[in-house]
Length: 180
Image (cartoon, helix red, strand yellow):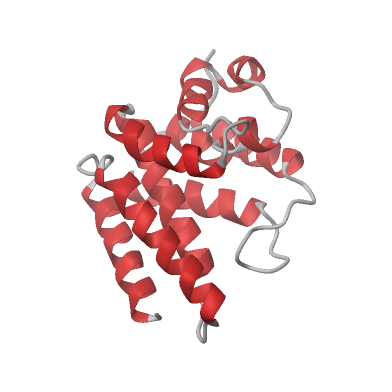
C-alpha cells in the first residue's frame, strides 16, 4: 500500500487525534494527550530531517494500540505493514503490572528494530519534558527522578541509531536534573 508521504503523516495525525480525543496528558494538567503524540512525531521528523514518513506516522500512532481499541490489523490496513509493525513493537502489554512493563522495556530495548528504538527515545524525551516544572514540589521531583532514572536504562539499549536524537535525549536529561 503506497500513500504519498505527506498524506501518510497527515492521516496518521488525524487518526491519532480522533482516537485519543478527550484524553489528558500525565504530568501537564489538562493538556490534550494528542500534544504528546505531536511532540514524538516532531522529534522523529526533526531527527530524520523529514526523510522517513512511515516512521513519523508511527510516531503519531505509537500509543494507539496501547491506549485505544485500535488493533495492529486496523493500522496495517490504513497505514501499511511497516507502520503497524513499528507501533506494535513499541506497545506495552497493558495487562501486566507497571513494574513488569517497565522492566521489560529495559530488557527488550536492545533487541528492538532501529526505527522502534528511535520511537522509544523520542517517547522518553517527550515524557521527561512533560515532568519538568519550574518549581517542582517533592512529589514532582520524586516522579521526575524516578522517570529519568528508568528512561536512561531503556534508552541505553536504543542509542546509536541517530546522533541528533541521542543528543536531544541527553540534553533533556541534563535539563531535567538541573531542576531537581
